[in-house]
Image 1: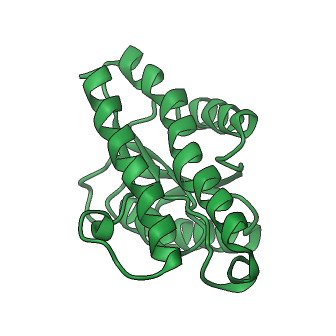
Image 2: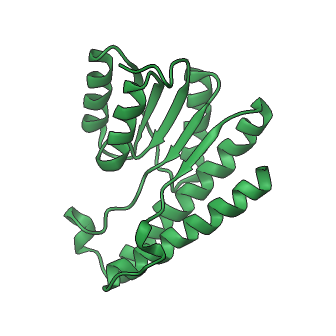
Length: 180
């Protein structure tokens, strides 16, 4: 285990699967105390926490839907209570519109889901944690965009995904200027 993030705390949204899970594993391996956020994949989140604890790391799982302002506030309060200072907040949660039940949604339902989770969720989390980090005098927020936002990709799903992730990119730049 590398201790690059020793004595640091990290909240990872959407950490029960995919990129969020890989991020949580990496941060824990680097020594961070990780809060694994999940919306509905409790078993996967608890398994990840178990793996991290088994490897000598520190982790806990907290359920919250980042598209819900009340859930985001509860997530922030839980993180503050359990972790103390929040050093890193990684907004990785994203709507899955390509597999499982997400693939069965209509185009408008997919768009609504992407806007709610990927864009609104990122914004709600940033608006909640940025003032806390500013008051503490330190902190890092990581927002997930998409490399093809600038290049484009053929298809209806990529059109929606690129539009939402471009929104995340623009929001992130404005947020950074606001708190700089």
